[in-house]
Length: 235
Length: 287
Image (cartoon, rainbow over all chains, first blue to last red; front, side, top):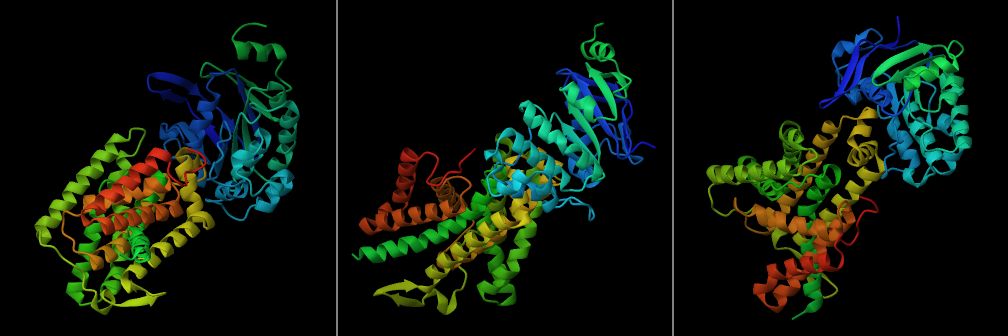
């Protein structure tokens, strides 16, 4: 049984329908990438999974339990943590406080502690007393990832963690991905950087206009197939 | 006329205004809610203390200790059942609802306790004073000011040194992202209003011991509280104390020149601060 799955998931913003019957699955320990152009519905999908957008109860299941209608705090307490798009650090909290608040609903005695996060991203320890928003974009992203890990999640949702960052910084952040997975969390990453996504993911879903248009393992998918699924036209 | 005496009395009066204002400041700082019933809630708490005093024959200080958890509960329920439903992008609904609560409290008190003016019995504390460097200072004003400083010290500690304060600040920054941390913004808001109502109870204790009150005096307390918050800069608790002191000073200095100028001087001081420092004396760095 999949750990986290969606079943004909739809989502609306007022009159506008953003998702049309999306079915995806995530197994324990797996890393799944969701790729697609702007407006494909990737972020909407993550917002639905995290409970920021509420849906039909049965449209999202986590460990067999319907969670589609739960609010974000309840989803989080069950073990699904999110690194939101745009990082969204709390401006009135220091770096360390931003990390600590991630442990607000800490679950069990998992491996992620403040020290473990500082070990993963040593630069954050030096800047622990700075305001979170005084950091560079890459460092802010590290805080946002560390903050989500502090709850010892079973599922980590990462929304566009490379957005607006220099390639060398993106590489640094993705270097942490194997260690994050060793910590036990299954990961869903939403990415526009296809190369990066294919490199770390076990499986890939490609979305276009609110639907999954292609899925498979990175080795199965040809450039042409991805191109077609991404842009809706033959390469 | 003794100017030093006037200034000391003004500063101590500022402590009372800071107590009026601290709860308002807390609630506004966390959820951008302007509670127009704040003054009436202070008056309500004063009647509650009076009720406990007359029913159980206790001193007002002990009665206030009993009132503290009751008022916390009232604040928690008020926020959870009423105010959380009207918080949102639009600032008008909460203004209307708290205005309505203000009217309801005033009329309920009028019905239940009549329009007669009341006062909490102070015993010896009310008239006791000590001499500080040649100036006679009343014990009660000193206690008021000391309580204001203590309240602000404790609030600052809670805000900046505890997990509860962290969740207050995070929710104030961004409720949606806070919910991604497992925080329930509505529960945080209810706790904050509960704490604000405990400060309101302390303010009510000194209001009721220092002066007469009746069901209609709430709105004027709201104005002083509001001015103190704005002078201090939104979101700064020490600024709120400074704001209270500025209004207290302006009022006593105005009254020393001409008794009719007391209230007016406070409002003029407020306008002057707005003119030169529109964001208050200690504004937050962002907003």
